[in-house]
Length: 202
Length: 202
Image (cartoon, rainbow over all chains, first blue to last red; front, side, top):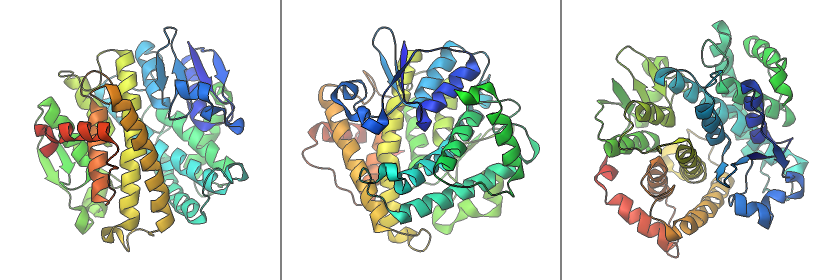
């Protein structure tokens, strides 16, 4: 088994942080996005839509998409649970995870793509697109700050994949030069705690 | 149990088509998006981020997000399986479903939001945003047409939630006045077959 990875990209990092929280070790193989290696012929035979991460099993089975990989590991190794312990807690965690992915990580990725010199010439960079993503991101973080008012974790009483996705999302927003509003004290408290966990270095 | 629904919106339709394929009946309560009812105080107590669909259980538990709702029903009623039968088949179906959601349904939704008179005044409509989404959508449909070259269903040997999401995505692309390329004959064959299923009327 190995995980096609790129150290500095957010979606592979989501899987790495998840694996670190679970205590699962998987060999990593770097695919250098700065060199466009995800669009090279050898990698397109592994993932024809060109994204990372991708998990390759020992029999050659390919599992792309970060959340599909996480759900796969969670089925194989249910403990410690990061996706709930029954249908209702799993449903709630999946819902919060999506709200963190779509409302935070995907918006941060859009801001980065449309403003970073790294993507100049690769993407039709459009200031309006970045501005819309910025507004979406702010609205979602306002809501999350309120959600964290009287609880410790995003989706319930213990850490879950929703926390992992939010950690990656906020980290990527910072890379995209988006600053957290100092008024979001609940979110700041949660973020400092997440960053201090050993898994955050994965 | 009831499902907060709006007949003409794509994400609630995804859950309705899924439920029809499973043979599960759930009472529906309409939330009229054309009247902005999803932003009314009573609905924001149910879903503070304002989207549909939302499932409400008999004990008052709220499960938002279409895919979280689908995974919940799949755990309770595994047959007929629409999300695989083992960790690997589930992983593949989840991966294809995401590619259909992010690459087709979400792109179609973006085109609609940025071009439809319905969203004029509600969204900062930007032609460039619609154009980028159109290009993303075309690239993903080219890939899907190729994937369907020598198999009947999107994610394997039998119908799955990936097919349901693609059906809704293409249907919504048509609402957004996006025409399928007549050269995509595999996709057209698949689409006609999906549309002919009784579930497509849900």
